[in-house]
Image (cartoon, rainbow, N blue to C red; front, side):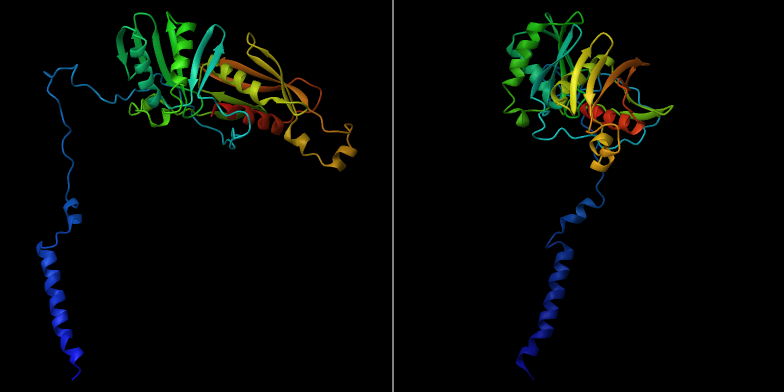
Length: 323
């Protein structure tokens, strides 16, 4: 008999014995500990605690405003991305203006901006009377600092006001303070994440009587400021897209724009058409406030044809600035 075969029964017996040891606890399998695990009740601090010593280390602001959600949204094709090299990449801190109101737009979520506002109030030696993270408001004896999510995802709006009016000197100081921290902002503390100040906003692109329009659940002043900023940056290509005029009183922009259908005309189509070259046309982008929301429309201001598809294409491009 082969001597090697003599060890097979002994090997099998040892394997069974060791397996039994593992089951009996010599080699404890911790995965089994979580099978019947149950959640523990939350920790509750006594009411008699010192509120100055024990408070929320990372307060979570709630939504500063409840925005109406549309009953249903039309299918919207993906907006044009503000890609690298387009000239539309937002600065870390930017100023916005609408009438006599002005504010800052910061390229950080509200949770990351909130600690910066608290630090600004301390370093500026402002006498803080109240600080409400759930509303995104810091009240001092001089100004009120207000924080809310911006129109573009991942950004925030910061206001520095007294009696509802913007305080220019405070905004200047705040802009410098936040801008100086842009390098370390990505690793800074976050107020878990004042994130509830962020809200979902749904832009509706809808067709009404053969005309396309964009329904934006935001005040018209905010929409005007964003479009004024990005149109000035993007509509700068002569012969293709240009910003010709702005009218803050009428809430309108006049642009020169070459539609996609016009850009796509082939040489044969051009030869057999009245126009011997591709042509742009003037279009008015009109904002109107309706029922707590803003409507954006594109109105033909030239004699050239402006189809529903052309209208939708332009509105998709422009509404992409607000996403």
